[in-house]
Image (tube, rainbow, N blue to C red; front, side):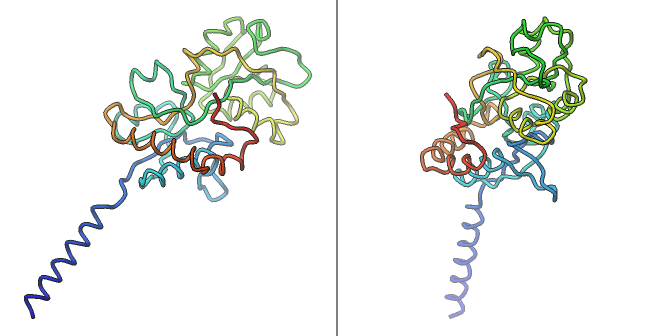
Length: 259
């Protein structure tokens, strides 16, 4: 009898060990530690919310990953990935050839145009001619900063900011003539009380795929091929099963996945 109980006990321990072994893989998901509505923003309690937070939760659930939200300074986010302080970047990072020299990317999970906004009542467009002699604000270490330096050399000055919010605030205060960024986040600013009072969209810039990339992807270390396969499968699955459309409709009246 004692022998039988011992065998049962050992079997139970083995089963419990097997269950523990099946525990979801934990990964740290990095994104910029700054408000970037409607993609990421802290609520009144400091909890992060927004479209990209919902996207992250959806793919982690689909891929059976235990994802831990890990805010990181934007200008240090790629070094944080390569040094293994984080395991993925889900922070509106465009897939570009320059970045692919250092890290890898999942398949695209959204793609939207790049836009320019400026003060109401001042007529100009999002072209080198339209921005000639103007002070243009961009976020540092972004594709928008790179694009402005290449295409808008006619501007009087290209000012770089650590966060998009700082650039928007300076535009509202009259210290900038224009701001260039992703059209979705600029649209969110224009819908805010401050944005409605001061500013309007001047147009979308002419596409430059070399700089602006081929959409936004999950940033990954080059060696993490198994994780990349899981993420790509999860993106495909939530697009197919309706999960992606379900949470996206809370934020957008169009398909943010793009072309």
